[in-house]
Image (tube, rainbow, N blue to C red; front, top):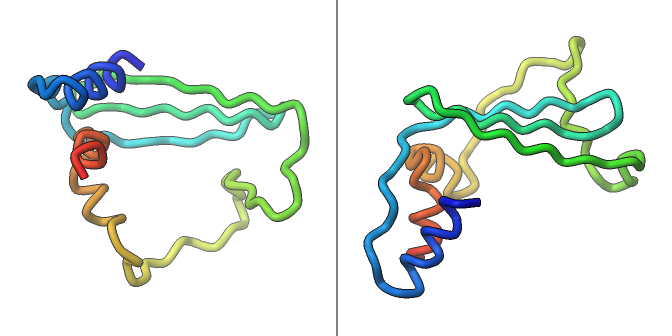
Length: 100
């Protein structure tokens, strides 16, 4: 939240952007209660945690992203546009998005 606020302030007041935090990896874990735990780990070892709690079942029309042991391995396909570029930006992707 602090970084998002600093970026928004930078864009609004044409001030320097906060220092980039480097590349990240993101892990999503579905909890037993249906909540989602999102862990973002930066290359310097710093982590951010986000929990998304839900007391309801996943509504029809939505996809459950819970990993399944018997699920087939993901395969690479054609990038529909922007995914690879966004991943390449790592921790700076929000900065790039706000500049667009």
